[in-house]
Length: 269
Image (cartoon, rainbow, N blue to C red):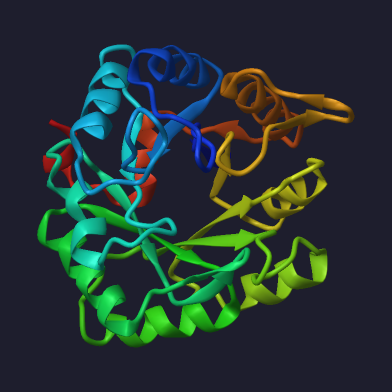
């Protein structure tokens, strides 16, 4: 039976990162089928920071309760350079990390990711046996990464997260999804993020079209159902897991997720 990875990104934009509160929610997310947790390196007040102390504390508290795959972000709009953005990779328990595939308008801000940035982040991941998940906001970014693959050898499968819904990026239409998906290399895995989501139809279409990873959580949307916002991330995970099951598929366990993503055995100890 086909397995789908649920990745939870539980902390919205400028919201605070409070480890003690977050751990309970993420543990419940895991109970309902999430197998990976994606966090930005933020202060308790919600500001992006090169100081990884609070991020480490959050993941440590999460891992006391559940065995989710640890995914650190190397992105976000800030004044940090790419070296500072990659500081979270120094945390020994990071198994996967975001690798941004190019520059774009992200809302009203310019999100800068030069070819030098892409190469630096890719090397920083692979030097540490961390599997990157490449965030792509338009079709051209897939081409960017394929060019970088010629200079920085990448493990197979390369993982693409197709991001829809941001002002300045691809929008969540079926036509855009099918066009975007058609450019993903045949030997790659691909997943989906729908920022600003106000329904579930686009995520369902992506799963039906072959998405191996679906990201959910407050970083992208608090929407639960018409007229209702979720109070906790696990409510969204539970809804998505039910949807996946109704489509005749299963949610991947953390062990299955590591196998699907090609996370080296060394990262699992």
